[in-house]
Length: 297
Image 1 (cartoon, rainbow, N blue to C red):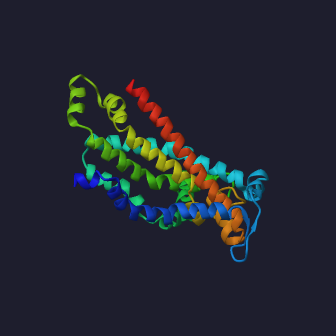
Image 2 (cartoon, rainbow, N blue to C red):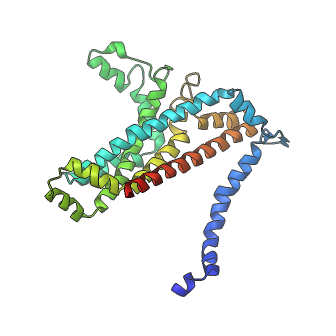
Image 3 (tube, one colour):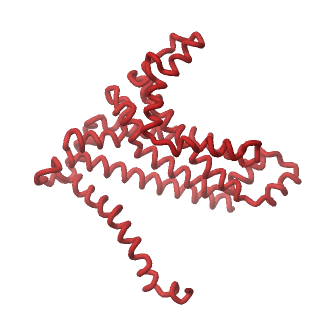
């Protein structure tokens, strides 16, 4: 086996099938989409090459509510990193400590992740319903009926009403990743810290969290990329409304491609989404690399 793996030719042969699949489902579509973004094309007839005109039209003139949609995706990003990840970490640390009913809570927190996004979106549409929705009924019960809203129809509340279930669904997923990493830390290290008089908060902040930094990096990257390309919750709950208040780049892309048949401009938005996801991934990896190097020094 060692002789086989020591040959570069053999390694290339083994990698060829996976490389071809990756090329066909990832690289070729990205290259094709980039080419389409330079065309004035309706997706049916012959496209006309227009160069970067689509980019100037969408980004320069802020057509189709593009830049506000980018800002909305950044709000999701901040909520994911600053709200979703800390909650997931706290839950993981609590479960990792070893509490009664640990398995039950671990499974319960993960359930939203395995439920269809469509189901969760429809559930929260009912929660936010202005007449019989659970949220407004709850406010009435508390005597706070003046706070009743048409949560998904008001420009001031629609954005947050959509993002709450989006963030909630993935807390359990990230919690499970953190939980697995915490459980993999040697118990000897934790016991040594306890003998030295450290409490669980100190153990968590000074031992567990630094040791699971690679998993934290992975979770943050997943959260950021997922936020930038979010689509399903927004499309199902508001379709970008009211008046573009919940638009994100993916819904703008869908509108251009499917509803308006502007394949060149829609492809331009798709290229933008891919580019910003790659950019944020590289930036985050660089930041975490510097943090690891600083920690090592």
